Length: 289
Image 1 (cartoon, rainbow, N blue to C red):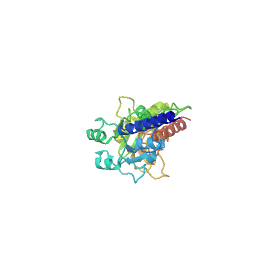
Image 2 (cartoon, helix red, strand yellow; image 1 turned 30 degrees about the vertical axis):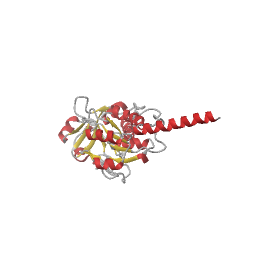
Image 3 (cartoon, rainbow, N blue to C red; image 1 turned 90 degrees about the horizontal axis):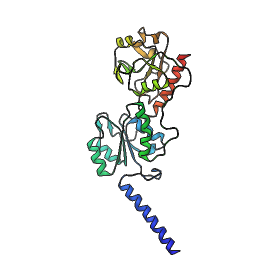
Image 4 (cartoon, rainbow, N blue to C red; image 1 turned 90 degrees about the vertical axis):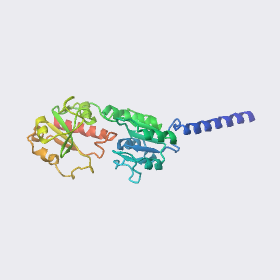
């Protein structure tokens, strides 16, 4: 009996030692951090949304300055100009999530992470495929089980839809086009829609003028303007939201094929694109009747 008790004590000590060593290396034990200890600095609004969707919103300790959807009391530790390292250190994260840029992880962040035992994950989210893959990468990074069905944000629309050329706009003054390579146009194509701009005819995000839009002559226009981010008050018609573009002689305007998607996170690479895809499919179906 004493021998079994001795073995049991050794096993418990080994388990505790293994956990301590894993903590020193910044690793997450199998099964995640459900008992506590996980502190996430999410330096992109879409990444914060993913963490909340995983049920770990209470583990976020720092946010991006543009992130108006997370708890307003959370410190903003970065924006488009860079990371506020003093604020990041003060938030004492265990894990740092950021959207990957062309320069990769900033050198100073790498040095700080090594010195303080932080784990860092830079996630590319420029294309629809990258946004979808980000969900699985973040789950693995935080030790969260993969969700059933994977991270697909849209599928081919199951019913007949409009097959005319559709222009996607993120703004009208000046006209801001969501073009080839943007995850919004990729959503449109996956649903079965036809973009007004084909591959090689422009960039993912472009500012055009009214004459450019007139030359494109779109047969349908979808304006994606999130509420609280320059959107127009409810009750204003979709056509009126186009401003000067609504007064152009465009096939889509003449036919009344103008629609607005005003989901709060409609322009953010993250779970909000699932809502955008569903609403875009419903619009195309309505226009196709």
